[in-house]
Image 1 (cartoon, helix red, strand yellow):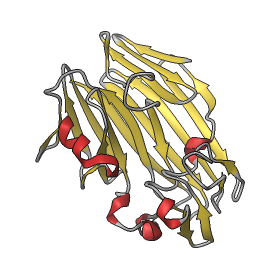
Image 2: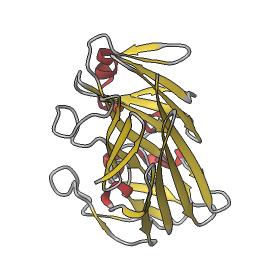
Image 3: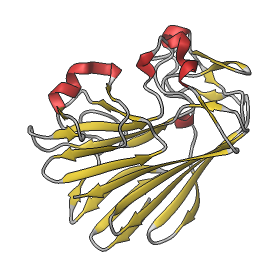
Image 4: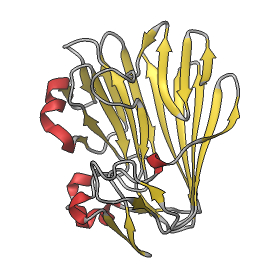
Length: 258
């Protein structure tokens, strides 16, 4: 367990996963074991969205890749690279066409192994600052590699009156639940506030939009994304790819208590 601390803020990271962010004792992160989701955060890479209707195949310039929902990155383990009092850097490295065992097989998937036709290195940096927690993602690989990126954190919800608010709209937890597994798109948005007992502001750089998802009233996933996967059919998921430029792309998420 990696613990970062500054003043009244404490962050706990378990094998690269953000399992706790407390400010003056107030917990913002959904806790494992609570109803809703077995994780507290994860990443969606190199694709976002389900692939079962496309036989778990995704089109790339180098042929078809086998990917399950939200990509193969989550099936890999993070390596801790550096740790300091207020920061920690984690990394995953992948060699093109290496077979990755799919944990969803055989109960939830017919794809036993997954692969991607490109090398990449994926880095996740936590930096705890006076104004909140910054999480930076670095995608490094071959220039021109297609990819999508989504960050999938889950936040604890304490009250029935909790809302997710943008500059133009306000969404309740029941409204998010009603959308179901597709997740609600908040399009062209880089700042969202979760208003509950305390308010948490979530701002992004590099991401285009958000997805909101939950099936329970005690948590909500507020997910920065580069592409909303339900905008296309699964066999056209490749239309949502962007290309890696200059061999590295950087994305940031800031969690700021208000």
